[in-house]
Length: 189
Image 1 (cartoon, rainbow, N blue to C red):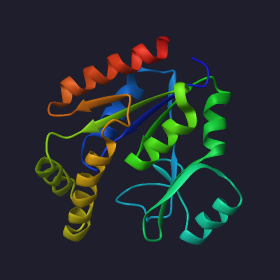
Image 2 (image 1 turned 120 degrees about the vertical axis):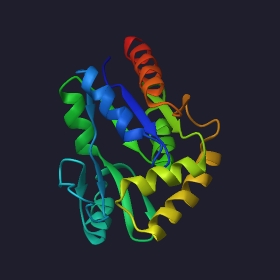
Image 3 (image 1 turned 180 degrees about the vertical axis):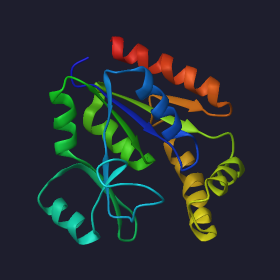
């Protein structure tokens, strides 16, 4: 299992974080990689728990210092990235890394880690269902939801053929079981 990476990518609202949380609860050999971002915390999010929160200027400085395995500017001034120190910390424990990351980041990580990585794209049954899930969260404005929905539609198109496995989350229980099998098979290799 040495230096393995499991990448979960999906549009917002597809169920990615729920499935990742489930897998972390049943696989002690997996450890979540906390991403860095320049966006403001949402709800009860805390630095070093859900994300490492930095200002856009701090993030840019860290880019210049080559502190990221990968990063991207998702929206103007809104950066997300994977810290090298986070990867090193988890591998030093002998754990496999689990990434809960946007679609472009997932493609980048698969390219970087190659056969060490399993990349899984979680897809909601439809864009309308994604919109309903985002509204149900109650964490974003209507404008932010519509921006996320538009991004989701393009991500679903972009992701085609770029991931090792596509998991359609139309039933959460079934999706969790399917994710368990795919990840277990990969970790056994």
